[in-house]
Image 1 (cartoon, rainbow, N blue to C red):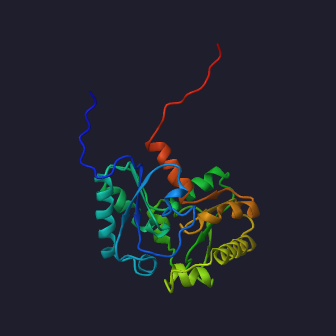
Image 2: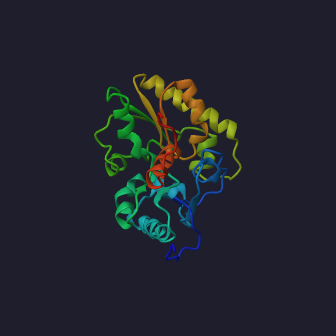
Image 3: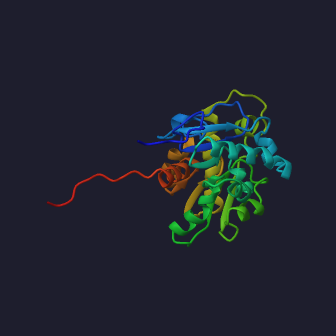
Length: 245
């Protein structure tokens, strides 16, 4: 007989996601679109906390609802926790200390990995929602403060800024978003042609990762790549295959 203790309302979700409140579209590739990942996820809404709040006013008071959300996800049985915004990097250490399961609060955790995987011979390129809001404290919180990076933000865009950064409306032209992200990537490459990899801070960027890679011909890291790795780490499966007779 196999006895489980129970106590969870929903069972079988591997990754829990702490979600900021936003109502613009989330195309496949976005962490808040469940079809983006080949395994089940569980979402915990942090009501009332928006992208502008996290980027422009990340006070200690803002942390508490995320800590409670992480504890709730742990109680519901997920095996690892992430967030829906890369700027949660600032709270990585506090979130990880609040629970007994792995936490990868931001795709930026991959910055040291990207640097060392590409020979530690060139800076890591970072596309972010807002370069002015991405500070040294964010990199220090994830142990990437000694990694050379070149950052390009989307704060001077039109569609991306109005919808995602400023919450002016919920309708969004994904073709314009893609064009603006590609233009930001080209600016990054012009400014730093020696980058060896690209990390997408923003969870709204992975839907366009394939196009970015096709044009830039670089390894591209984002939250979906990190979530997939985390899932494989916490939900190992036995290998099946053949050996010689």
